[in-house]
Image (cartoon, rainbow, N blue to C red; front, side, top):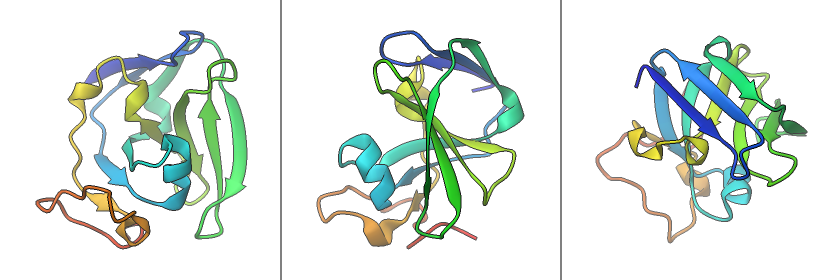
Length: 136
């Protein structure tokens, strides 16, 4: 997965990513449950510099995470699709939402995080490493 692209549901925002992502994961934190409508969030962690917006500008929403760090979510202001997010804990990095990829089938989770917040009905792959919160 050296180059991939994605967009929002209505197509007003498009992006391209080049380079191999350092990691991908399934996040079960409560914030991600809000974003996804209840399910874990499938995400790819990428350096901010490898993402290029090729169409449109996302809207943003800032809040504090469970750690107290400020985070920003980026989404389409028209259709509401969540595209990526960033946290002051990880400067220079973005968390790309797999559902916005043109081909989400390229996603392969390498771990599950925030499993301490997972709902009883969430599936957590028993073959992957799991972390009660975010890994160190």
